[in-house]
Structures are given as C-alpha cells and as structure tokens.
Amino acid sequence: MKKRIDKKRAPSLIKNNRKQIFPKGLMSVLIIGLLLVLGGYWINLQNSAATNVSPSVKALGITTTNPTITEYASVASSLRTNNVVIEKTIASGLKLVGISPYVYGGGRTSNSIAKNEYDCSSFVAQMYRLGGQSIVQQSVATTYLLAQTGTSISWSNKTRGDLLVTAANAPEYEQHVAIYLGDGYILHDSTSTNGVNISKLDQVINKSVLGNMTWAELFRSGTIQREVS
Image 1 (cartoon, rainbow, N blue to C red):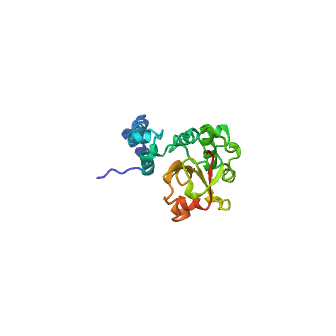
Image 2 (image 1 turned 90 degrees about the vertical axis):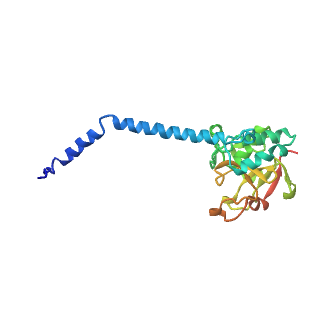
Image 3 (image 1 turned 30 degrees about the horizontal axis):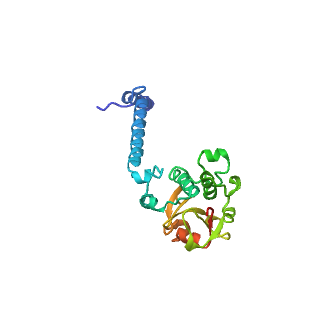
C-alpha cells in the first residue's frame, strides 16, 4: 500500500529534501567555484588572444589583431616617413586600436581623454596634439573644423598623415574623418569598427546602414587635408 502524502505537508517535505541535497553553505561554494572556473576560462581566452598577436603587430603597440591589422603590420615599416609629427601622431593612435571605444561627444574634456573616450574628430585632433601639432581646439573638434585645417590635397595625391574628411553636406550619420596611413589603409574611430581601428579604403563600411558603400566612396566626395608639409 502506497503511503499517502499530506498535501499540507508537501512543501515542507520538498524543502527538507532540498536541504539534504544542498546542505547549508554548499550552494554558495558551488556558485563561487563556478565563477572561478568561468573567470579562469575568460583569462585564458584573453591570454590566448594576446599570444596570437604577431610580433609585427606588437611592434606597432597594438595588443589585439584582425586580418586588416595583420596586413597593415606587414607593410607598416615600408610606409613610415621621416616626419616626426606624422609618425608620433600615428604611433599614438595605433596604441588605442582595440582598446578605445567610440564615444559620441567624447574626448573633449581632460576626464574623457584620460578614459580614452573619443569620437572620430576628437580622436584625430588629440592624436595630432600628441604628435606635437595642435590643429583645432580639442574641446570643439568637429569634422567641419578639421576640413578647414592645413592644405587641401587632391584624392590622387593623398599621403601618409593626411586627413580624409567627408563632404560638408554629408548627412550627419555619414560625417567622418580618418588619418591616412598609406597604401589604402586608414586609422580612425567609428561605431562600425567598434572604436579605434585600422580599415582599408576598399572595405564595405556597414551593410546594414550604408549598404555596399566603402570607406573610399564615403571620403572621395569630401576633402583631403595635409596638416604637415
């Protein structure tokens, strides 16, 4: 004959059974143990990513990698110039690749700069400032102001260190500025690149927003500004 269970006592019986399966304090130990395991796994992933960064990429001061970064690293030495300002500007920017997120309106106060928070124009302005040349007032840096600095250069004559700026009449979501690295590479800060990163001009920007438009198509109708002769 099966033993009948008083429904009123059922909850307490289940509760007692739970206590037997998970004695007091054991659940906390299990949770802590799981967190430690997951934490260790995450650290291993980070270490693995750092280990996979090639020596040529590390030499640029970059701690992360992707195919475009690797490609640029393989030709970087051949693109360098003897211009101290340009090379210091680019070197300062490369150190932020993969670690500086895009923050609209960021990079215009000392506190924001200390956190490496930039948008496209404040990033360019600050990197040139670190390179030794102030091109616009940092607190009011905009693509419009950057398009009026330096000397205008034709698209075909652009060279390392020049600024690629979108057209003044471009819609706000297309307004952008980048530092030309040479050989079709640019250094910039955008939402499409998850912050500071290296891109190629022939790469599609963001299909979901701009379709098949490439960075070259975005900038070609704009201006090229040479800040250092």
